[in-house]
Length: 210
Image (cartoon, rainbow, N blue to C red):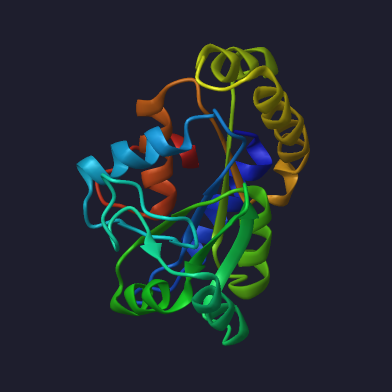
């Protein structure tokens, strides 16, 4: 992470008044960079960190449970949520819409519970508009070559889909400076500890603020 980003994040943590409600932490970055893996590691060690459950118009898959993987709704229900301002952010992907319900996030922040939101660049920008106090963290790959290796090495998607992801990744990497802090994913364990330190979890490593 750059010195400027580290200093910015450290300053933000130092200025947070004691006893104030928690600050939303947004984790974003290109596809294949390891966001979901880092989030799983954090949740496994610190279940008190609440991960927002998205709402989607996509049909539930056989192994999915409403309210666990996603909140499932139809187009009319999603339209109502958008019209009422009930979503912090939303986007469309592959013909389905996905969004972050506002009320559960705000409720847990008021309780003092740390909240983590894993979203793409478009969603992160929307959250910045609707909740400007949120800490925006960008997860970057060690190099472009490594990101290409990770995406092509999955072997689960056709070449044209991989190419679209790479094209999108270029745009997302160019937006890194929009974020409050950048973490480079050379090690899941290191990134986990750095992100926990930014969130303010007691006992987390201090590498992100050094």
